[in-house]
Structure formats: structure tokens, C-alpha cells
Image (cartoon, rainbow over all chains, first blue to last red; front, side, top):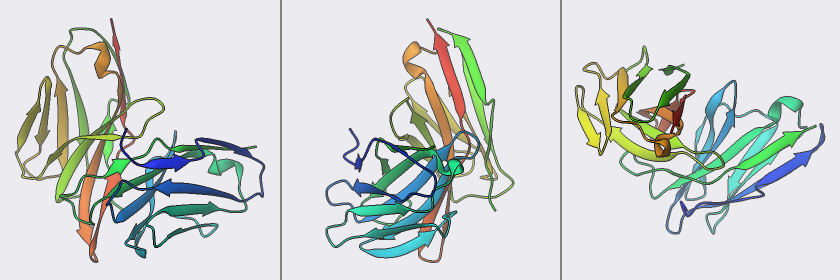
Length: 114
Length: 113
């Protein structure tokens, strides 16, 4: 158990819909990361927040958005869903935004778009 | 765009055999990490290598960082079924007050009893 909690674990939704994935970081961790994992693309960095502020953006689509709340939990919003958005979405957290800090991954949220 | 290529993509071996997986890039990274991911779980950090030429050992696993900090290898001695999983390498790069991980697509290892 990494201490990072993600909900829901599985989600099936139709194309065009919108979903929200939720992440609670490890206690005390200030930095939250979102990754997408698919068979063809591997693990892709989407976005990072540090203490409520956006810190870095990766390959995140404009249809996707995220935020980190004052209690440090984070949400990833996926809208106008397409079949290609089906993937495993991971949240990860670390104490600070520094290479020396270990990043801990949650168990992921499986999203299937039908 | 920094890319990390891992090889082989799939590896199936018998218990007790040795194996090596490779992680190569055309870019230089400040450090490189190896993770193992088991089905239904997120990746778990195994090791971070920082210095060119560095070798780290974790029980039966030996990690090496290339001299030019562009490539790395993971060698497993006497593989066991418990070593089965997806092995991911990730290059660490820093910039603009943040740092990012660039992951390879992984090597899926199956160790057959």
C-alpha cells in the first residue's frame, strides 16, 4: 500500500461523456502527479501540482483538466471522452518537488470508454 | 522530446536463469530510475542511479547507469517467479523549477516456475 488513494478503481462510460477521477496523496505529500498508461503509449506524464499550484504540464489534452485543492487532494477531469481515452490513469505523490524525493503511485483508475 | 527505449519488450524465462533488460536514450538525464509494476498496482520505485558509471545492487538485481548517463541496464541473477512484472525505466530531467519523469514502455518479464 503506497498510501496514495484513487477513486474510482474502475469506470465505464460512453463517448462524449465527462468523468472525474479523484486522488488523495500520501499524508504530508505536497506534490501530486497524474499519469496515463495505455498499451501503445506506455506511461505518459499529464500534469503536476505542488501545494495547490500547477507546476508542470505534459501531454495533457485540452479536454482534460485537473486541480489540487487546499486539503491537497486532486481531481482529474476528462471531458468529451473518446474511445482512445480508455486507459489506466495513475495519481502519484511526493513530499516535495525534488528528484531526491520518491514518487509513490496509487493503484490507478481504469477508464473504459465505450 | 526525450525518449527512452526499453528492450526486450517481452521476456519469458525459466526460474533460475539470468537476464538483462536495457534502457536506452539519445538524451542525457540527470538521473535514472527503475520501477516494477505488478498487475493491478502502480509502479514501485526500485532504485535511482545518479552518477555515470554507477552500479547499484538490490539483492539479486544489479542496476548500472551508463558513463554518458544516456542508458542503463538491469540484470537479474537466478530469477524467481516473484520477479514477474513490468519493469520500467524513467529518466529524470529538471527544468523551470520542476522535474519530470520520462518513462520507457517497459519490459514485461515472466518467470516460469
